[in-house]
Amino acid sequence: MPVTEKTYEQVALEDPDGQWELFCGKLRSKPPMTHAHNILGYELSIMIREQVNRREYETKFNAPRTRVSAGNSFIPDVLVVPRRFTEHLRRRSDALESYPAPLPFVAEVWSPSTGEYDVDTKLPGYRDRGDLEVWRIQPYERTVTRWVRRDDGGYSESLHTSGAIRLAALPNVTIDLDELFSLME
Image (cartoon, rainbow, N blue to C red; front, side, top):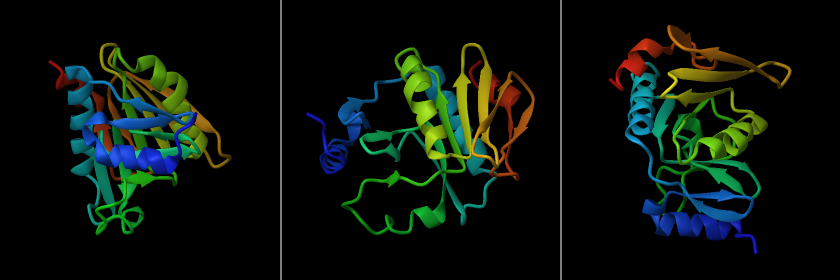
């Protein structure tokens, strides 16, 4: 029997350590991650945070949910949220932090425990909902697969192994991949 979104929100709020996601109406606990996964996600979120206007954007690491569709809510590794999206949540202790609208940036860092699920389920879900830029970081291959939303609603895909990437929806933000990957050494 599928879990309702209301039940999902209740479970996620009552058990925050469970890192609960909702996939096809079923609860799914996000498993523990590797050091490489955690360090790259955390450092990427800091790199972005240091460059955005914090009065306009919030940068998150492994915390809020994105409502992809009915019965599907995921916890991205890194995301950037316009602060105007958070106004209705700021003073509420009873609301799960979840964003149904497309975001400027969402990233998943590959981990052995979630790699296939991310590629087959989460990344297509972010693109289906219209997030403006979506990244898949592969820490051991030191690659970033990047999808940038085009005006026609499709995505341009590119693979990066080094150098600087200027974020499409956050043009004042540039991520130096050499610096990011060097943090794993």
